[in-house]
Image 1 (spheres, one colour):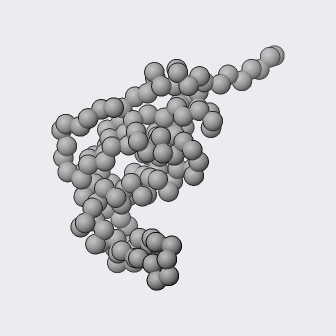
Image 2 (tube, helix red, strand yellow):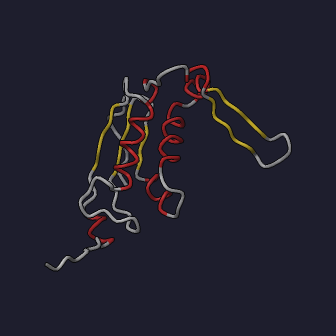
Length: 139
């Protein structure tokens, strides 16, 4: 029996992209982020290949109503550093949700994707809205 491996072409991968819509109301942040990351990578497709960007578009609404489990509401924080001395900044999860809840989901999904050249293109296919959005601009 002859077994052949077929690799997807980039032009067919772009033509077969679909749109997926999620409502983040009462969804757990980590579980929602993993579903989104799988859709952006295209791992749910039969003709998935690591070197071809064959993922779909994802639209998420109501990110201000996403929930987390355990004591993360008090314990979780976001860290960034400017590169200079004393440039460390930490923002608690609760304050980040008040300031910009879309950033929480965006960082969660971004950190689940591989750190390579395709991550930027995959993140461009992710649309995040903090409220109930009925109109968005499709690229």
